[in-house]
Image 1 (spheres, rainbow, N blue to C red):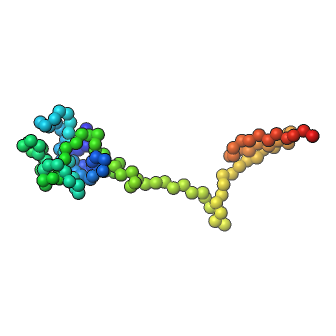
Image 2: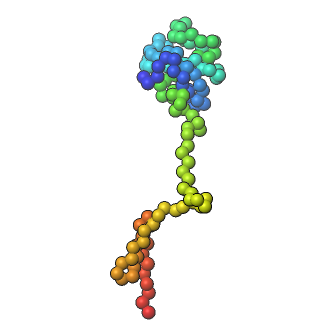
Image 3: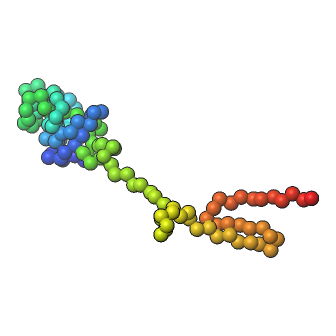
Length: 126
């Protein structure tokens, strides 16, 4: 399991914030369960299920979920992730500058450019 007791996480579709209080097997169902004390949302228990205490928290603040329902707190809120903004460079006159292009003329009078999309120009014969 990638979660450890004491770690702050987000839980479920609403991404409720909580603290991992228990990681392991339980008597109420097979498999690995993560016990979480929710910080603001309403949970389902006090860290106990069917009379077995797995961790301590206030009544109605505890919840047990499968690992797939939990995300690390720093990964859980996409809106909080940093966005990289790309801008054009500016010269002394505060004008945006385009990438430099190189134009090469061939012996037949045609030309080609690097740094720009290639296009072919066909001259009509008179």
